Image (tube, rainbow, N blue to C red; front, side, top):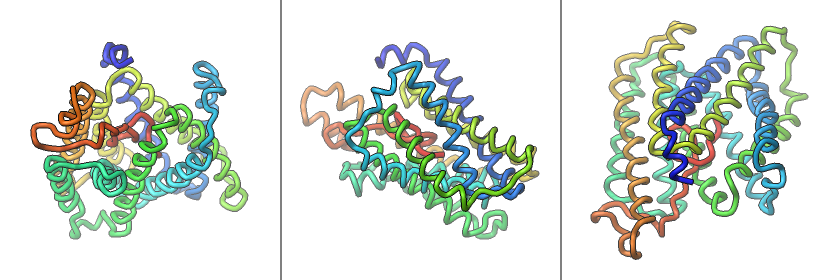
Length: 333
């Protein structure tokens, strides 16, 4: 399987790039529909509901509905709860901040995931990854310059909370992934999330004109296509090959922010962004290097230690995220 994926890295990169652009367009639409009096619940509902036909079509064309049978509905319910919370916080971050700044702050997700993996999963994190965490937060301090009026403290707080919650989703996916496939978790998250949001729609839904519903339709479609693209890219190439493409989101966010909203990122963003991006990439590099070493090691001593540096807990690291997180199933966007 791994060999088959490695045979088509260029296609995987192109799909991942298209997915990154689709995500940026989706978040742009989130900001645009708010100006048309669309509530946050409505935006998330259309994002989820319009993904459902694509997920069902994917199952019909592939493994079939029988493949998503599960005995862990409670675990999927918990994943749905924190997944929807993460999605709501993600959307709110983009509503409160300019596109580029919101994108950079959400790049801190792998930094928080490293911290949570040590605290919750009890994974051993060596000095290399802890150093990357520190560098990442230095980058955050540069981006979140209190003198920058374009970054309200509430927006920054919501963005960092969103990154923390999405990191929590990736930790949950690691745990669920020990018994459930990515297809199963995607299916139940989409179905449960849509059903939960449908219950809130009678209260949250508002009357809109045809152009606004067109924007909502585009929001749902771009979100669904991005989700499928992120997943498809992982079937064609290793995470370490496709994941760096996610950081191109900053380019598209800066460009669309300038073209659509007339916002131009300040110098502090360009000073801090390389540190945050470099931190995330180095964390992913270390995790996959250790995973490869653990897989090919001849004994427990080799699995536990790599050149006297970071350690892994029995090689249990399971990818689970999207964008700047490592993962077999994209986390909520």
